[in-house]
Image (tube, rainbow, N blue to C red; front, side, top):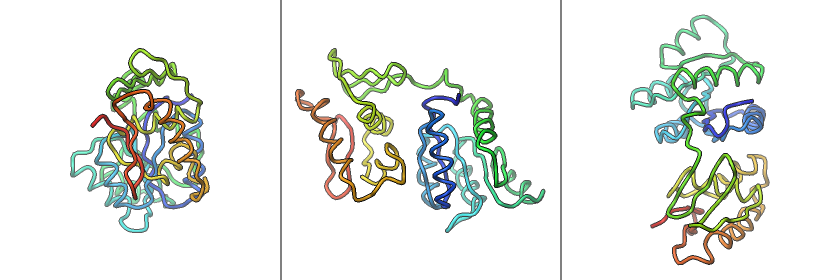
Length: 231
């Protein structure tokens, strides 16, 4: 069993690999965010929300070594596992010297990938013991272990998908999430981008966590998406 509720950034532009790794890690209990370019990876990686980064060497803009160097130069200490189709000693040495903590060649077994991620997290003190079990915004509390949600002293009954949606927001408080990003995080990247399922679930969640309270937490940012904050 993987390390539950740990956040992993997957930097990969090959949709087949994205699908394979993302589905597998989610099944192991990881929260997975995907960047499909080097610049996107740097933007997300510097936010510091992740316990590990899986970084492909071949990206459409910057290569993995450049991304790794930029992250390290900005002080990002997140463990980085580099993926590449090249298996020469020089490639491995260059990748490690750019700041990567470990190196895997494609094709790889998923079991080995998970094992290496867990080792890197332990090495950097990322054991599950240190992971926060409760998320809180204002008087809204979500317990990631018991799956209980409360607003003040009132217990709120959520479906599994509503819980996953709320957890997605509460792990990135104040950040505007687009419908596409929510679909990717909660339903998987292959969900139909034209579906209105996000809007339907937002309405259901808003009715449960906001309708009976003066302070509204779940907000629409027109033209961009939604965010959860107490401002």
